[in-house]
Amino acid sequence: MRDASVGFNCPSCVAEGAKSTRQGGTASGGRRSGNAALTSMALIGLNVAAWLAIVLTGGYASRLFNWLALRPVGYCVLGPQSATETSDLSCQLGGTLHPGFSDGAYWQAVSSMFTHVEVWHIAFNMLALWFLGPQLELAIGRARFLALYFLSGLAGSALVVWAGPELSGTHGASGAIFGLMGGLLVLAVKVGGDVRGVLTWIGLNFLITVVFINSISWQGHLGGFIGGLLVAVVIAYSPRERRGTWQLVGLGAISVLVLAALAAGVAHLA
Image 1: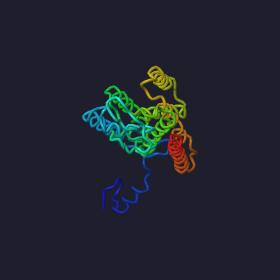
Image 2 (image 1 turned 120 degrees about the vertical axis):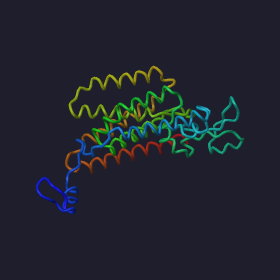
Image 3 (image 1 turned 90 degrees about the vertical axis):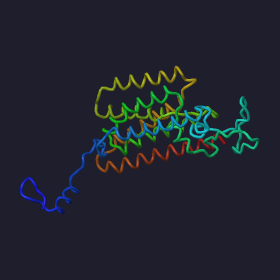
Image 4 (image 1 turned 180 degrees about the vertical axis):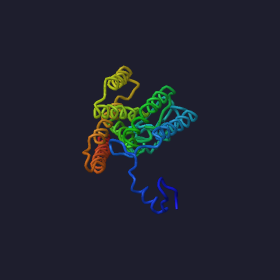
């Protein structure tokens, strides 16, 4: 028997009561995280580990970078100053392979989200993730936060495949970060909060994107932002009745749409 506020309870009664007790939930139907910063810390750790590996193996010249960055079309480097695009990536002339998404390097749609070279690039993205991630996870729960993060990043990759430079290695977590910004905007509107600060931050980041458009992937930023908006709308505005089912169907539909865009991008580049 176990002590209770009045008398004693049997162990089986305590266990049954624990099962029937409603766990703390978020307004969107997710389970409230015990440590809302844990997921962001894990994502930051993965990004930093990949960055260190790339920097220690040559930075932009690293073979690891060439395999992880998102390149719509692959090619072989035949010499220090020359590059020849190949259709089958066989590098028959003995060049160094830089694989491309349209040639079968499909992992790049995800791996590019963890790929950085410049210190300022990873510092800015991880700082934004540290500020945005915990409050979003606290608001919608860990599983929905991860769905928001990765679907936004994949949406950014899809637009890069369609509209990005074919031979450039697009990289960085910026698409996912812009998706988190879009998600924060939707949630702020949903609760009737003051969105001026969020809009100012988003506008400033898009302004930076436009100013440095030659060195920043606007495709990844815009695609990620749109993806984040769509995911957050599904999470925040699903009907209360059978909310989990509506959210699952909605997120599944977005996943299919993004994957279809990536697949169509392969056919477009062929």
